[in-house]
Length: 612
Ligand code: AGP
Image 1 (tube, rainbow, N blue to C red):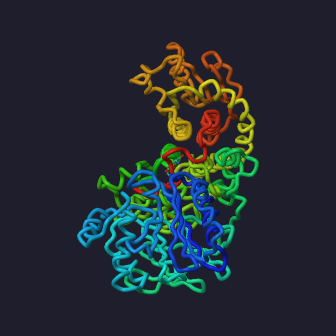
Image 2: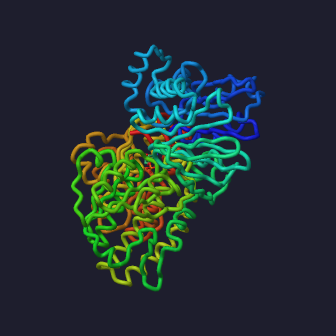
Image 3: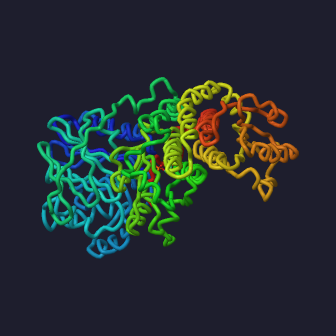
């Protein structure tokens, strides 16, 4: 997802913007730029393909320029190649107005055609330049930046988070959002605009989360929020409760490794305060549902993308197993366009780490439009999804900076398991099971810690398969989604093609791929289908497959057919995914690191996909 940072106040805007953009680098981008208004009331724009350091290299003189107002951007290309021309900011035709933009203006071609009919010409391939020139068109009529922005946004269709400055009005930033997150940071005699709190947390903990169709006009002394119809919107100031240390790597080489190692704590934070020991059950207060409400749930629809979708598949398995409530899990991008059948006694859960994924947000809105209750399982407090649902559960994983999701997955999965036990206990599950579950769950953080001690051993295994071109991940039942997640981790950070498959399904096609060059990573834990997966793995072995097995501590049988075995502690079946995924995260991490790839910012990927 692109990044936006704007500043107006007494300090020099340039270093603040550059530092803020660097704090958003983890979100993925391919070019960067910034615009300031200098002391001669001239707009100065700097932009460059590549990383922010490349931008800094082209503006040595400017870095000594003082300007107390500016906007900056990191671009993740949607319309037009990742190059300097297409980088933001884009300007109006008179080079007075500069604009940075997250999102997609879907009707930009129609707007561009109208502007060309008015004699406008364009340098870039972007939808953003069209919006900049459209604002300039209206500015020429009204000489008022706020009015010009509103008139332009009324014509624009699609999603945007924007920040705009104008050299005629050098003490004002105008920002607006629709479908792409934007916050206003409130400092001491200074204000910040950003697409992510991380960019400003070092300066202020006071933020206002803009809502869709809100425009904020900011000067050095004040700000005003209105909607497109000029109605004043009351500002709700939130206090961010975490600090800068949570978005720094510390002693770790990569954020991803740090976040893998944070899982003993993050999983505990996901269940802390939610276990009711004396009733052997679970409380998820954010759902605002009584036991009677929970009993009335006849169908659950889970909607998500990527890793969050994988956690949803685990949710399906455990909820159906414990609560006997049918659960459907669907990709958000598919759900929203297939005119889904949602019966009145269905409740919907949307799962999203960022709380900003465009497809998931759109699916949420579609489900709400159908009149059913929608709950969120999210990580980012105050995110759009968290604010638009009827309630929900925060997973409390803390900032997840690495593009490849790790601790959010285990925390999402923990919350879904809690949900399953809570629903189970109002239906068929007895207190004895609930008590055993709670006791076992409390041991999970230490068991994750035990697995993390295999980190060096797993790195050695990674060395043996780091040059593979393909890999197959196998799991059955509850471990099929874990196999999918392990494959996704490998794909997205090492660029090795990998597939997750139900182990028994391998016979129906993928077994043709098996040979000594295709590593097979298999989850074969001691559970009620252990014998079945062992048979599947014998079939792989018989075809010279190289098997790396995730096995239960003490299981010697698997050594007969495994090239390598990674042992994990025993636990009850519904908690096994919280353990079996850890070695897969580490394996993917080390392979990517050994291949000298950009683990935290893999090519083409963004941390939060706020475009469709
Ligand atoms: C996971 O490693 C990926 N970064 C990606 O699949 C991610 O899970 C997906 O984009 C959904 O993001 P969300 O949870 O923030 O909605």
